[in-house]
Amino acid sequence: MTRRGLPHWSVRARILASMLIVTALGMVVAGAITFLVQRERTLDEMDERLVGSVESGRIVVESANPQFVTVRDALRAIIEVDVPAHDESAVGIIDGVPTYVPGVDVDIHLENQPDFVECIVAEVADGRVHQGTTVLAGRNIRYIASPITIDGDAEQGIYLVTLNSDEELGELVSAFTTYAVVASIALLVVGLVGWFVAGTLLRPIRQLRAAASRITASDRRERIAVEGRDDVSELTVTVNDMLDRLDTAMTSQHQLLDDVRHELKTPLTILRGHLELVDATRVDDVEATRALALDELDRMAALVDDIDAWASVQVATPVLVETDVAELTASVFAKASALPGHDWVLDGRAAGVAALDAHRVTQAWLQLVDNAAKYSPEGSEITLGSRAIDGSVEFFVADSGTGIPLGAEARIFERFGRIDAGRGIRGSGLGLPIVKAIAESHGGRVTLTSSDSGSRFGIVVPVSRKDPES
Image (cartoon, rainbow, N blue to C red; front, side):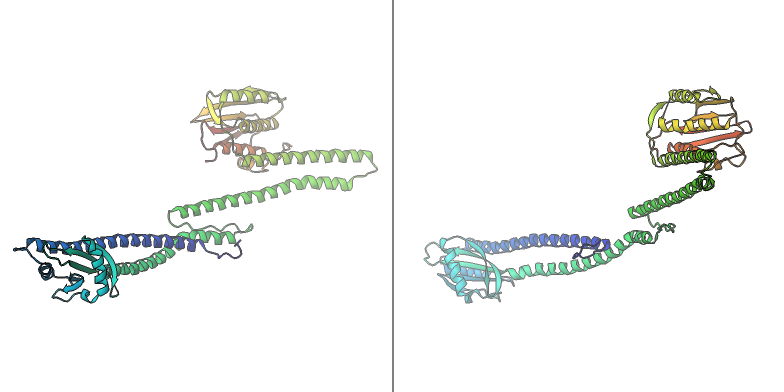
């Protein structure tokens, strides 16, 4: 449910927004850092040029032969030798008055900037070289001012050189303006590509949502087409498997309900019929109807118990424990021997241990024992035992009954699948399905060999197994 007042953003839009925000931040941070580093480098280069101009003036003065005797001569020589570049300006100042200017066109005519000249004269009054930045004629400039003195000359000279920093940094600003345009175009391309890529990757999820909306209890056949081999495709496979399991579970549930309804219909019909026909004035009729009703109720209670046992086996995961097979065989044989009416024979005990749920295996094995006792003649011989076969162990029971009718071998392992064959044996038809479910939960199977002289059932489970559900 969408929270009131908050915009509804699809996963596709959120992925794209996250991509664009991160990409834009990365571009801005990278561009800003690069711009600042390059700007500092350009300013350093400008300062080196200014210092170079002062050094050139010093060399001119020191290398003059004969040596200059006046400040005016020295400044004139410096101005004549050090020709300013197109973005530079220079002036020679004598006692605070701009006196010498270059003979070429300069960026700014410093002689026409009396306030600036006055400030420079004040700065250099301490006799040291000064560098700085200021705004002149609407432009940002870098400057250097060097005092010029000659022994024996009372005049004070200053050699002032300026550099137009706007022009020098203009190329850098222009380059990063181009970078901003290219980055914006790249961001737009990333957005377009990301929109289509996110849409392609999320298509299975949209199909999943659409399929989930179409799936109903009456129509569960909808599945999602698997495309690619990425994580989303694996999710699609997992969801399809989940839908298969849900479909199987719901089908099994419906079948169970149908089977239970069918199984309970007969005793309920019998009860209703006898209750409707009972003669309340006849004691013997009431007693007979009471006995019949109790018998049918007992049968229904047993059926409910078997259904509960079958259901618990279906959902429970066996607790595998290393179990001594010989001891388990002896324990089950001791329990079977307590059943009267048959000659019980122990036919071998397998040696070694097996990873199994002893409680569940005992439950299944005793179910086979109970079936053998029901369907074997009174006083007949029934054998049971265990043996090792090909990395597995088999727990078997063999009786001397009439055997399973030909073609009914599969039917007896179906839920409520009983074979009457005129034997008059009552049962819920869930015993062998429970045995089969227990064997399969251990990763094993149930074996059956039958003939007119009897049947042999076996529960085969692996000796060792890490995942009971694999």
